[in-house]
Length: 120
Image (cartoon, rainbow, N blue to C red; front, side):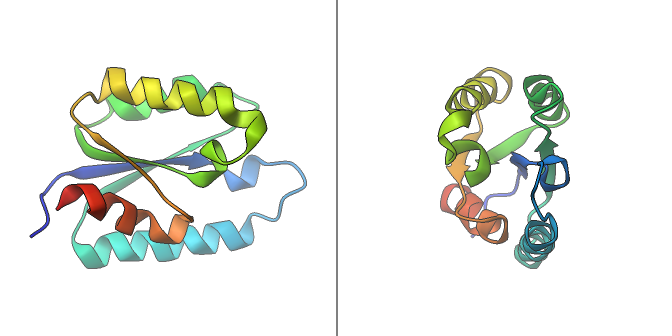
């Protein structure tokens, strides 16, 4: 049985990345959203732009709802130059959603599976 609760998926905005074709990531995000829907899980997405204020974007998203789980995408945590941002995101989750589980996906397509590890 799945514990009911909203999920927030935090990731990089593929449209705002320089020299990057966003189409494959956007397609994977659509497939990922369909998986959440198939599981009956309400999920919100927070896409951050590195050239804006990513911390403020994450903070606003976390304050926008009560989340049972927050999934942090691989683009944020897997790219060495973004280590500091990853740390900030984790700590923002701890402060603004202290009761939420934190999960990590492998791709936008398996975000629902990452959340389900903690929503069961």
